[in-house]
Length: 129
Image 1 (cartoon, rainbow, N blue to C red):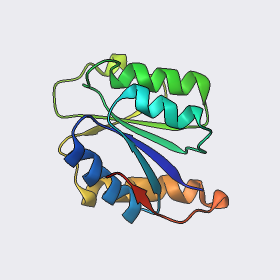
Image 2 (tube, rainbow, N blue to C red):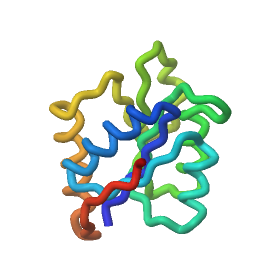
Image 3 (cartoon, rainbow, N blue to C red):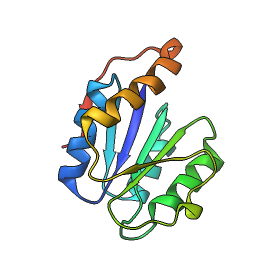
Image 4 (cartoon, rainbow, N blue to C red):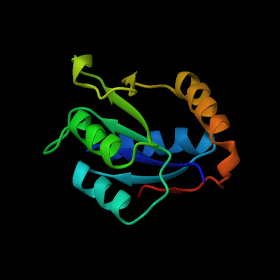
C-alpha cells in the first residue's frame, strides 16, 4: 500500500495535496494538526509518506516529522512551507517542498517514491473532506 498522511491546518491546502498525491498513485489520509496525524499513525495505518506543513498551531511540522521518524523510521518525510524556514530544524532524511507546490513539480517526485514502494501495491483513494 502506498499511503500518505497529509497534514496542514488549511483545508484547501490539504485537499490540493491529496489530489496531487492521488494522481501520483497514493491513497491519502488527511489531518488538520499534528495530534490528529499521530492518531492516524497510532491507529496502525501502514503509512509510507508523511507530508506536513512546517508552520501549524500546536506542534510544528518539524517536531511532528521527528516524532514520526523516531517511532516509524520507515516513513518518508516531506515538509512544506511558504514562509522562510530554517532547514536545520528538519529531521535527517526529510525532504523540503516549497509552497506553493505545483502538480507538475511534485508528481514526478512522488512517482519516484511510489516506484520505490511498488512492491507494496495499493489503490489510490482520498479521504480529506
